[in-house]
Length: 396
Image 1 (cartoon, rainbow, N blue to C red):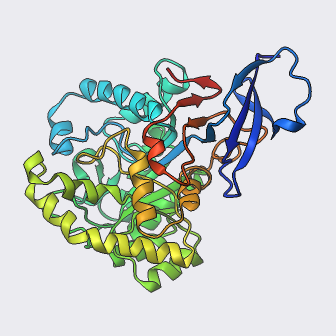
Image 2: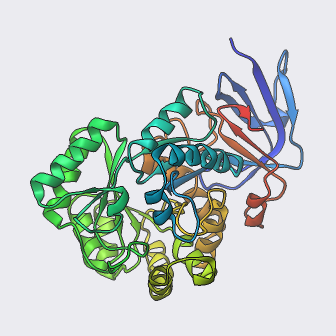
């Protein structure tokens, strides 16, 4: 029997989307929640340590479905990562992990890093060598030659080569595969709307991942590329900037998640070339920003499943900034409760970790945030956390 801790008196937002439960408690033992209930029904507390959280709000830790832990959110992150040593990039990753954890992200999905650094960081967190959220890692993103993200990815052309690239990432330890369906904002000389890897090429990568019991995510901004990715069997569309009605229908039909990353172009436009962001990136971000928000609103209203992701590591898209994404989703028409669910339960569902994470229920890991205010009334309270708990331990 491990140490038992009773947390009591708070209003519980459990992540399932139901009404907040006032005057709640839960017991944590051996990293997991063993009992949840109302304080008035509490039996003898016996030899438990008691943490009184009266007047506080408690919700699950945030799950960020789109992070680049090795990218530094400066004006030109790719320029920096391509100039510096692998060792230096790894050190940055260690620092960035701590930023996510202290800001309330307790689990995330890393969607592209060079040289296997993400695998090493993931394993180091799991072994307790370094402190950070646990995470799933995709390894090198798979792109066509000269395609979006090529400089930190694995370039591959043709069905057989893409299949081999997929197998290489799985062999190296990938938890999922990231496949580039279209151009993007931060790669020079590529058009965000243009298709890149073909449907047949992507299908080969998806097949390899699914054979290994792993999921796939696709960077997909333009309409045709998004359709190609869905028809190839992808599990999540990242960004989804140009969604038309047909694409939204396909997402519903094929049960595909959308990870919108509204903050990625937002901060590029907000900071601009004065902050050292390349002109081409600013121009492209400006060109896509309105369509991005409109696509998100349409998808949300149609009932597409949405998981929160920020694309942290892109220009001025900071590793402790996940709540800004929730605010933008709400501005674009999402209810505050749905924004919280997209950042907890839905994220866990997409990552395939819902049995252990994403909601605060008996049997699940004790990853939770203590807030001073009700986030449903004021999302800014997420930018000023009272405390963060990871696997039942308070984060210093």
